[in-house]
Length: 593
Image (cartoon, rainbow, N blue to C red; front, side):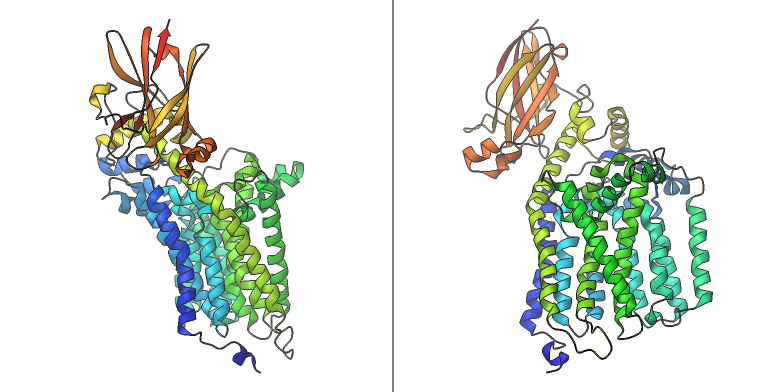
């Protein structure tokens, strides 16, 4: 029986539709999660002068090329700023549009991986489909929850999309000049998308000038020199007036703390497949990332040993390029961020880079395993079990991360809701811990920017201008209270409160909890917002409902912020969508001397 007979070039229609459905399931699930958890609030870096201030200049007519060119951390965000402006100009800078763009970019990357995989396994459609299913699971994993819910993080996906688009261009029947032009244009767009976008130039060089399918580009010295010239020109332009971060670099730590450097590099690659809520997350990520790197190196070496026959290297080049991009991204991140410690490599927003290496291995391992070991060797069949086991390991690791990653996505969304609550009360309350913890470390910058963004019409946030309780719409006390104050203690000069609260209209944790106080001759006023949420597994067990998991809250408030005398303190569930307050149970009577 021939290999073609064993593995027909076409699958039955029902099998193809089933596998297509499996490929579409991860993005559909993620889309539902994003629809439920997306929060329209600028977060952290988005309050910077070169991002929030960028929109202010656009609105006031002072926007120039220098604002597009301005450096943000290590990056030149020329292209992303154009996208941000296009999306934000007609939506009052609604960050949900940028989250949708991130999702669409990931979808584009997944589609391009699918088309590259079809050519890689042209004679093995089942293998191609199964690899695409695994790639879809990885690309749309909730483990990257920070990237999905932080509008700015679409910049992480742009270079990947441009590199994959270049690989597809190289598989078309274009002239070598056309291929060179399109790849150089895409690499330039990648350069001005994110700091690691410059890596498009070196990772595309081998597939352009060494791959057998380059059609006119292989060993073309003139084209290689043109590529090198374009790369150096972009480097020179990119680093014009560049400000390097003021932090310890890679080389000093490489000599003094080599193990920390290695841990950061490996954890960066293995983070997407490590259980994010495990106390062993870091060693797991280091082991997974280190293992993937070694497997990639071994597979790459085995492929290059079979350079001259069977078309193996031509089929492997796209995945060697993709894996190389992931590894070089890890090296670049290690060089710039290792001083923050290995734990920083586990930041969920970086997950797409480790995913690049894993996806590359998902295609490279079966490609090598199913290929004859020599031109005259018969096709091997026993390796199918090994390949299936390796695929099962990847799927199993992903499955183990799925539940904690989904929980973390919900937690991050709850933090963003609390951040938006603190934003809406920014003008009427003293500085709140929730502002600096969940919105931006510089509350004065946020206040200045938020007022300016609303005043100019860039954003349309409901910034409250009064703290009087009478100025807020209120729901009457429901039959079943949506929460309660459980603890009230005076500790030294502070008042400590704790309890739980739900959003009564939606049966989910309250967006926020505010506190009012009143006294003789003093009308009720809002004086504080909760500091943070608490995980309440006890309430989940008691009520047999997971919605209570993030319902807990606590607040520490200086007594000096409250009026003197006999006080009545109340807690209220706050709804972001309506601005309405719903009273919680257990009022607190307090004597403030």
